[in-house]
Image 1 (cartoon, rainbow, N blue to C red):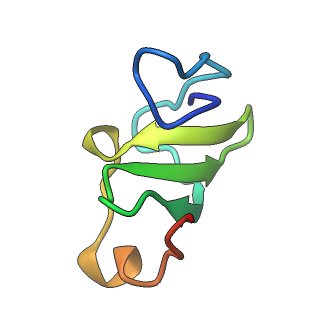
Image 2: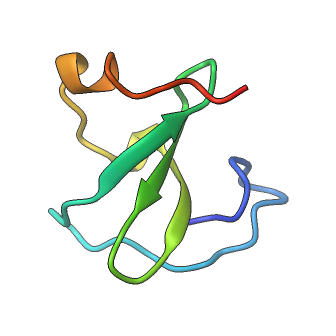
Length: 64
């Protein structure tokens, strides 16, 4: 879980565990990063680390 949606400049705030459920609050315009609320931290996670159903992804607001 990173402070910014970026691998190089996104300070690490915490980590997710396999099969952990999180709340999705935002996504980047390119849908490559999602802002999540997890028990240990709140921040951005790469879509490559998440399993999101397409119908759920469509409901997550896009950040501006």
